[in-house]
Length: 274
Image (cartoon, rainbow, N blue to C red):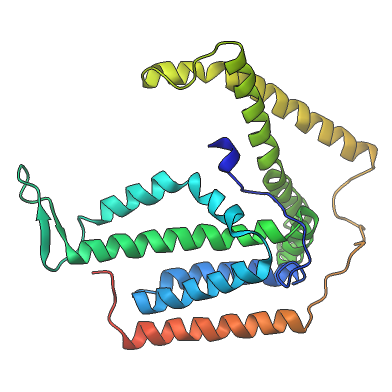
């Protein structure tokens, strides 16, 4: 399970999505998330899913890498889907013999499928941003996007740096956790059997060395930044300047077309969620 978490991983490449301006990628990711929730029927959701698969194909990242990220949230998707089965009107498909009020309708089945597709699409599209954008590009893009906040004396560079470092160290900490768990199992630790309390107590030998390792890495990183005379973003220059190209304009135009289709579907087709 630990190895299936892909949050924060970057996969180098030269695809169209890799070559896009990171500011545009961040902005379009937020737009996709917003319109994914604006879509209130299957027609609009189909438009967003089509856009998602187009982006996945153009990213050049293997689909297996994307679907690996779904394993970590599979329980959440199934739990949410099962929960929505009992909400919705329409023809009754199944009624619990012990609790007649608990029933599944065709509307509930539609709700469950709709919500499950929405969550899966959200995770897959969000993974495109980290898979195709390096931590350095993310830092520069976030800093540029939050630059207007400097008027309110907000330390934009420091916030962007903290967010990127936190995202960058997620795969490192997951790898460290996997190593510690393997080492404890090699010493005879039982981490998978027993009740809930026994499993919680079995995590103590994992959490303690993980916290020690995390603080050690943070100290080493702080020392390295101090040795390189890092004192925030004041007066710093950029080795790589961000420039928008025709590729970014085409991506914005394509996204606008799909978003317009979602608005059209929301206006002229009945909502799927009831």
